[in-house]
Length: 364
Image (tube, one colour):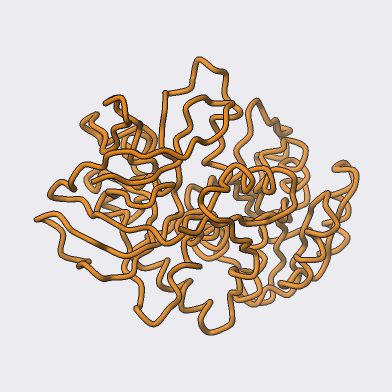
């Protein structure tokens, strides 16, 4: 079938909205008509890599939401007409997947960032007959229709507004999952988040749901700090990163119980780590390039550092949980959304990069 998709043909060029041909789903795949797709920083990582690392024309998008149109012969958990949110894929057979930790899949890159199916084929073909990369995070949802890996497809209650739930597939899931699954923030505890973008604000909301008594948000943009306070932050910090660790210790008394970096900024990572108490835990989801260093003596105590890939979530159960929290008014992540028509994808990227919007969502 012919579909409309946004193709990134050059790592530093614009998204090009084009007509592509879409292949039929394989036995373990699902054809989805997209209603909306969130735009996340991960969709734009090609902008930050040297040109030689660009993998070629690709359809990105990994926070899709839509309606199932057809399913492969081996798919039984969804049916045509179901509302679905699309998330990441995994191999389903490695030790991490067997441990019910698919976000730590040993073959995560192959199933999510290889530019196609694990066998090397793609579902998209352009007007010249050339292959265009597909299956970004199992889905490539910057398209009017897509063929997604079956485990990327999560069924959502028909009564919910699925068009606003796409960001649960990655960014919001990562922020909330870090709080719930990795840091296990406890009632009455203290929590710090560096970065008050979509991930950080989702983490603030989740920490409030968990009953944290002290929630500290760090950002350089005052408008984002105001949002953090609106969604549950009890304290906010801005300015010189060298002052953050002493401020965190002062605010929390003996240092924070947990902290979360969403920025990938080495100075902020160190500030969060140094602001922990003796048994505190820092989780990191920010994508940075380069090194971050820690003093040896600080590493031999009881502090811990834990990475966060997708918040260590199992999408099939975690996304419906977050959707229900939202429906119950406890997790208002949808208030972060600014909608853009799909053909304004480049305007959405610019608005996100400038900080004008928190979570752009493309609507079809």
